[in-house]
Image (spheres, rainbow, N blue to C red):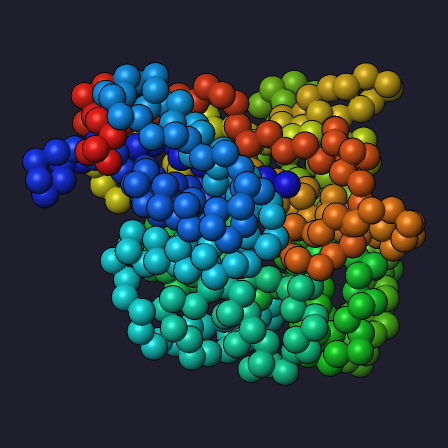
Length: 441
């Protein structure tokens, strides 16, 4: 499935020789990932093709005559599609050609040099561990270093991930985004304009039954036990009064195994809860609390008369979804690093033999999309295990995973990145005009 890359804006800038070039602002999950020129991406594509041949997605061609505004917009859309589709091949995603290039782009965009440093990794109980890294270390590498610090079994790293987490004064927390393996956590912290953010280590699977895969590793059990306690305290997981009393007694006994067994019976255990948002059901503007996990999207909706309604959408009845930008980009004269406008995620759902669209308006739309992709990926792996005769399809980002015939999931797992038309408000000098020629790029 596609990666959440987008290029919502490009800028025309003067070069040292008096010419002009176009600088593309590439965002990942709603945050500025890098700024890059077409010529850089073109050289990178040629390097990738020498390694992977024609298996790569199409790259937009050079223009040797002046580009019109429509041609420039078409190129930007084509570059966006290229970046979204390129990481779908796990061999490309994990190659040195891919990793080295995107690492350098991140460092150069934010004027950060490679050097030794330390980084605090926050655990689910609020405590942190300090690890020594390079500023150029990827999230995958940082996770490896952190796992060695807490003696987490290396073969279980695929069940955990690094997240950008925002801590609020009232003790609440928000999961801002899941860091991609090729992102640089140090750079993300230095560049993010979201206040009070930390790098957190959390489990990264949406199927609670996968807890069973971790029970032979003490460090892994400690982590999911602490996260279970945190989720209950933050009211992301919602035990009944009887369950809460039993869980409290087991916590006092420090009986982690029994605590986790009972937790898996708790409503919304293992789910990720979004910040309060709005939706269009049963009418536009209704407040909603959305939890995602355990193969479902659960919404507690506040109706106009202040009554609440619980609505659950099963993932096996979701056909596709798309993330759409709303509003405008602001303050483009400054260091625009996040998409300040609201986002929406809409998904098509089958109900009473009819397909309907359900819309959630949330700044965490990309995170929600990542969770939906994760649930589909886990379902595919489970079905492959149950049907070993089926052709195997690798899990996103992994080179050796169970595979399923993609035709079965063509409608189910289709990801639509955004609508073709986006309203973006930028300064006049940020637009691409027809006076720019290829040799200027």
